[in-house]
Length: 191
Image (cartoon, rainbow, N blue to C red; front, side, top):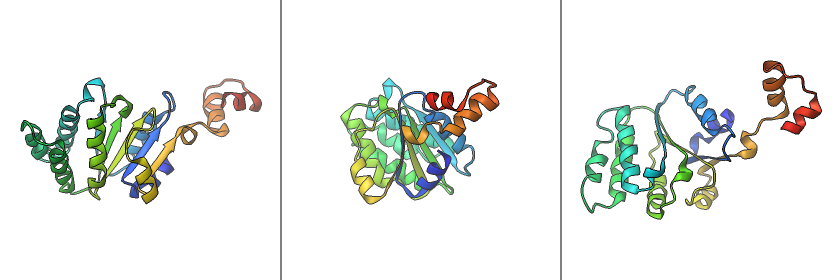
């Protein structure tokens, strides 16, 4: 998984889509620890199914990286009737001013189902600045313009098959480290 995350560095979006228990969060957390980049991690919950709340949380998280980065977006979000795209633009402009690389992780994106919310994320994708990387973890493919991103080579994907244990990884975990006596056929069956 780390090699695939490394390889996705030129993509606008890195998508990890797999059922629960495949290790999406663990893979990304451990990979992030090896990176020389600021990290913004937002775990989505049911309340984030509102575009204003979602972008407020994200702008607040970005502002924690360096105070001031998210403030213009937060001010824009406070203006009643202001289009969400204006706040997204402000946030992406703030991120672009960050001196180093920035990794933005949206965990559990499957919790976002609101069309306006998803449209705002879709809007943000072509505006992600060159110094930033967006990683999304979800149980199912989100309703975003994935086909367009795939066609342009701007999407890196890690799916269930990419995250699943190989025979040797399962053997190392269960037999060598776990001390469970299993033969190769049993390990194959578990895999």
